[in-house]
Length: 183
Image (cartoon, rainbow, N blue to C red; front, side, top):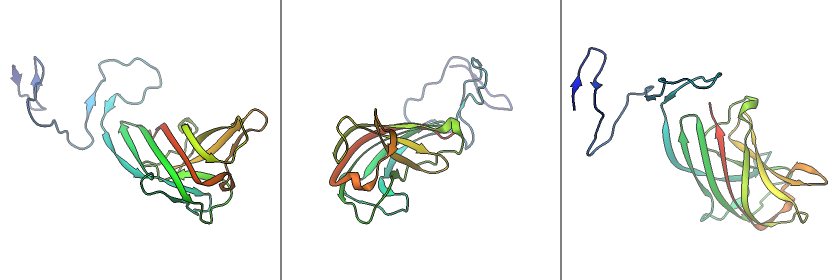
């Protein structure tokens, strides 16, 4: 591999092969894809962040009254690539406690920016233990400028509405995922 070292960095003429170890970039730097600019409105072609981990799932009402979750089902996972975050989780309620009124999932690992382009929907692929009308679909809607998602239901007659704590039983459970933008 031929490499030259100019004053502003290393130039590789035939690729980079790291046999063992990591490539570490200084904070604020990343992989620049600026060789092409394909879409108007594009704001960056720099991939400068990757992170993965877990987050604590909180199911609560809008007055911060949290339900008690089964400790085997109260941790979600996330992957953040650039300005996009994907979360997954599974919760199982042991007790509703003093929760009442509209409910939400809280504690997302990153705040949802306060911009209408950042609205996102949560998919709930499995749910049990809810006292809902037959034919009702559970979902979630991001709450801007927070790290919360409203738990919602949809049916043909009523449209979309927030799910109140009274619709949860003490074994309500759901598996969910969502991708949202933090850019």
